[in-house]
Length: 298
Image (cartoon, rainbow, N blue to C red; front, side, top):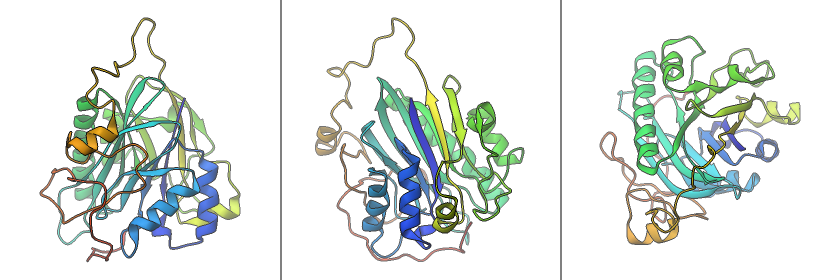
């Protein structure tokens, strides 16, 4: 069983010790982060966030403020980040994607944070699904998309996602599902969507101290427990024939843009590429300073 979580951490601007306790309580194999730190010392702060849950940073650019963190229960095969279409003067959005292997199954997990603007939100929802599926197809993985959708179920962007991937919460709900605001939640604007075929064991909130959940950030996290048993007689991927079986070697031999080694302690970034262009590297690149940004987003 794979535990995938999604959490908007508001750039770690609130009670960081409380945030750390919530992240630890998630017990996530894969954690999709929105509003990840992206200004001064952003790499170090993302590594600190990951360490709270015994995780490492697997994918994510500085711009866009999304990241994917992975734990020791999964094997990291690949990580990359893409900037989404620009809508001036709105804040630039992105998707972070990590491909992991657990129990002989490959899963491509994407983290997104959609805009408050309806037009941008709808376009980015479509673009995010397309990019995630391209990566999933490339690695023979099952796609899972998680994030802050900034609208509720039944609205256009949410519906677009739910028509292409399964909204996990209604399948096997745990709790009331509300994620915003953390103090007095009454909206479900954060979600996890999985490709059809996953068995959703449960999906909902985390069993953490209510005081910590309120103090940590303005959103509540979502956790989905997903199972996808291998059909009887199906063989696992061949580690010899598989070109991404050794992610460390891949990173050294330039097996592809954005490939991250397993056990990677963090990610890097660079000047933004053209729309849809993958991040050409996830480690050791300069850029600790802040960047001009659009208006603050929820």
